[in-house]
Each structure stands twice: as structure tokens, then as C-alpha cells.
Image 1 (cartoon, one colour):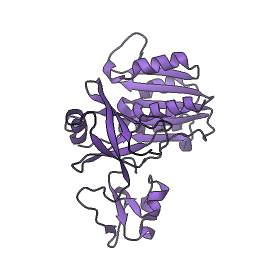
Image 2: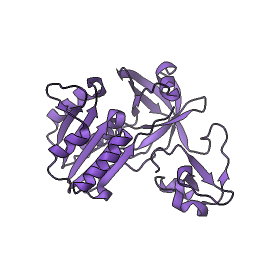
Image 3: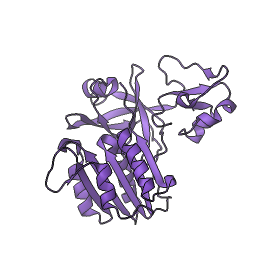
Image 4: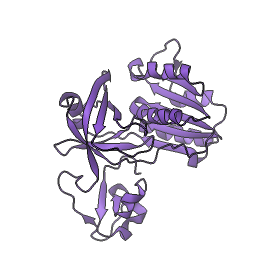
Length: 288
């Protein structure tokens, strides 16, 4: 589907792969890159990439300048790149270490900022996430790929409303969108739903609550499905969104997080009147 872009290969002849490039940037498509998950080859096709797997992909070096735990299983990371990374709010990059390990993470920083921020979920058997938690110190150097992904927002979009829906660290790209919208003095209404089973999963709760008080355009809806707490909506985010929203016809919708939630909400939003062209989705695929 072009969501994780972890299976990127490069063809010997770019003409062979035009139908297998959904989700890739125009520059990478022109160079002959394609997604193996979409491919149905009938002849020899690829240039072999070496064991590190990313030497053909453009990347920059970046130094870790801040690191802290936002909850017991969510790590905050801030990097200072050697050169400016151009990206749009909502996109992701691949982070690589000196051992040739690469994983995709959404950017939580605004495109107007120079430093790069990430909200990284620690997976039980996650090689990269636990490397970042245990082995990385301030001053450590990582590799950062070019920006990827189509679930992004720019000020050029003429939407009257933004509806942002996330579970877990799916909040990261939506936080990037929020910051950029505020910087661009976006005049429309913005509703953000952040869902979790437990309270610690709402790891950005205080920041979002403060932003909702300081910015009249912005409305924050924290949702807990596992426990009931005062001033927090109780139930699944996929159920609460449609019970609160009167109409979706004028909204630009962004869905990020758990793949089941994303698939469910995409269908529900469409049935509730949202145009498919205005539903932008980035399911968070999980790998070791």
C-alpha cells in the first residue's frame, strides 16, 4: 500500500515499474524506485542493494540533542541534522544506525523548525526502538532519510476544517500538522481526537489541553477506552468521533495510528459523507 515503504527497490529500467510506485515521491519514482509489495514482475528487474539496504537512498547525518521517556513505553527524541531536512507536516522518515538497521518514524516537529522531533513507541522485541532507548546517548549520530509519505498537510489546502484522529504515537504526525497550522495562522476549525486504552497513552495530554485553551480554533478530545476518568471521554476513538461530529462533508481528515482504527475510521468517515480524496491515512505498521 506504500504506507511503510520498507520494501523499496530500484529497477534497472524505470519504465517497467510505473504501476508499482504508489506512495513514493515523484523524485524517487523518476529514479526507478518501486515497492516490492506492489510488484508482479515477469523478468529480471532490480539492481541489488548491499547488506545495509539503504546506501542508494539519500540521507543526512543528525546528532541526538534531547532524549526523554514520555511514558513507560514512549520515547521522545530530538535530533540536530547536519543540513536542513525539507518535509511537509505529517510525513515520516527512516532512522538508521551505524549497524545498518533502519526503521520508519513520523516527524513530530514543524516543517518550519530546523531540529527533528520524534515520539517513538518501544516495542517488546523492537530492535531499533530499544537501541534508541538503551544505546543512544546525547551526541550520538544517526542517519535520517529523505521525507516520505502522502499523509501530509500544507497551507495550500483550502479546507475549512481539519479533523485529526490518532491512537498512540499516531499523534506525532498530527502534532506536526497542528504546529504548522498554527504557524500559518490557519483560520479554520481543528478537532483532534487522541485515543488510548490507558491514561499514560495520552502522553501529550497537558500540552494539547493547554493549546486548546490558548488557541480558539483548536478543540481537543482525549479518549480512553479502558478506564473512565473525569474530563476525558470514555470509549473508543472510532465511536466517539462520529457521535460528536455533526457533519464530515467539509472536513479534511487525517488518520494515524493503529491499522485497525485507521481502516475502521476510513470506512466510517466515508459512509458519513466524507470524500475519499479528503481522507488521508497513515496506518502504523509494526515490525521488529
